[in-house]
Length: 381
Ligand SMILES: Cc1cc2nc3c(=O)[nH]c(=O)nc-3n(C[C@H](O)[C@H](O)[C@H](O)COP(=O)(O)OP(=O)(O)OC[C@H]3O[C@@H](n4cnc5c(N)ncnc54)[C@H](O)[C@@H]3O)c2cc1C
Image 1 (cartoon, rainbow, N blue to C red):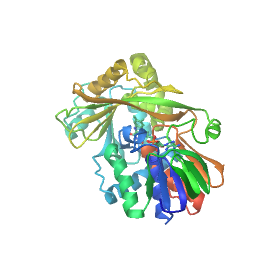
Image 2 (cartoon, rainbow, N blue to C red):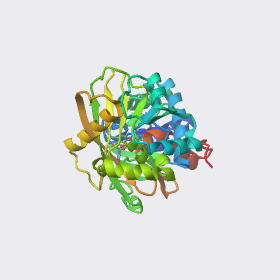
Image 3 (tube, rainbow, N blue to C red):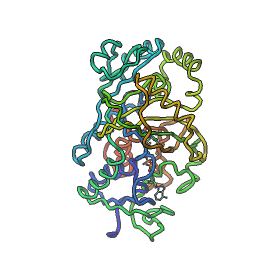
Image 4 (cartoon, helix red, strand yellow):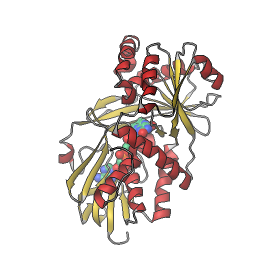
């Protein structure tokens, strides 16, 4: 460690790294402290799907647009491959079409078009589900492999900006200009706590003011199916999960139909996201079960619901499962994220929805502008 820092960031997930990037670009001296030896939280367990389409209307959608633009810059500078571009949301229910038509009429429909089944098939023969009714194609979304992207961002921040990383170090208290850690004190003028879904650690009394819980998701990696997906693939169930679609009034008939036809999926918050790696393998998920301490067990029943939705949406049987894992994130019913200020030099930043990879870089800029001045440019007023 090299003396005092302008800002110490607790947590080396995507939110801590996003804050570190924004601070380092201002010329600030930055240290990032994490209790794990390498990233192990939600930021490396996710799809790496940086999605604008379907994000909650307003601030979250604007943050996603800004974040996607920053990802493109960072990917270039840090040599992170963008593995997929675009989203194909395939629908099998007639009730989805009026919802898609309403969606593309809003500002959130930027970069989106609706394809008929024939037009979709002409563009991508691999998606062969016979009962496809319409496909929403979005050109705005991108996808990276989080397992490699997150370590690369950390390495790039160190090499490009001199950001220091203190790993295998738990922060025990944070009262600038001093943090107490499991490896001794650290001096910093400001502190940003980005603790993922740790609701009972640092500033637990502040977090208790919010109505927070945790959400467990089940994820799978499947063998190369022998074809390339045209982009990230979602299905009708995603139209109920993503607030940008589900809060439109036209979602009501689709909701009624899915409640009647797929109650098991809805009970476990199952919807489909399928993305593809450079080696052809697929990352497929997910489910949403809520508890203060979710159990760590992946239910085979829930995995089968996810795999069944993959088969129905793509028209192909699910390939062999190569890996299974669970992940957790903090969750709140009334907000997608929170920034809390327990004291003038301290901020807590927590994503309370499954959108941190999609909104984090913009949030990092906002937090640094708030603490150190300047403006964040997510385009939302
Ligand atoms: C399975 C899954 C799929 C998802 N898919 C997507 C997706 O495709 N797109 C998307 O936008 N979002 C997705 N999300 C959500 C997204 O991954 C999260 O919103 C985001 O990763 C949260 O980042 P974070 O930095 O806050 O948390 P984390 O990645 O959990 O990082 C928090 C870090 O803080 C450290 N820490 C906590 N307390 C301390 C302490 N006291 N001292 C030291 N270190 C500490 C932890 O060790 C950890 O490394 C998904 C989430 C999951 C679980």
